[in-house]
Image (cartoon, rainbow, N blue to C red; front, side, top):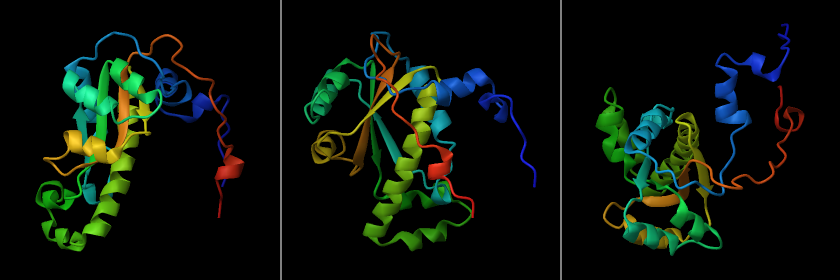
Length: 206
């Protein structure tokens, strides 16, 4: 089996080089944002792209809370450590990513050809593990969708998950796992890019 040679890294891909840069090669996690607001249309477009990524049996356990009120934003910022609180207060758009521990209840909707498979996930502990892992998978799609609409994302941990859930998820029972700042990058938004592993370290051919 022969391998095709490419003149440049971009030649290996079938989408526009500028799109590859926007999504991957030049994309960065932003640490500051401009004051330019993010439209509801952009937020809707982010979800519409994100939802198309594959998940186990199409289970889609990710739940997104866009934090729009000052009250909710202050409550979220109060749960965060270090400089994350200031970032959360300053970002044009703020999303809390959570997963639904009862995602299996939607089986007739997301897996209509075999709704009886809901019975495979009666155990709450294993169901939560599946929900969490697939929500993290969807979080990756979410970050790429943010980039696809021409915005930057600043994903953050470093917060009190129980406190966030008490503030915004008490009625739903959803479990938060990531907070993401979204908007146009501001001044000094980028830290120096850290090294990535080479394929010869991270990839095996068996």
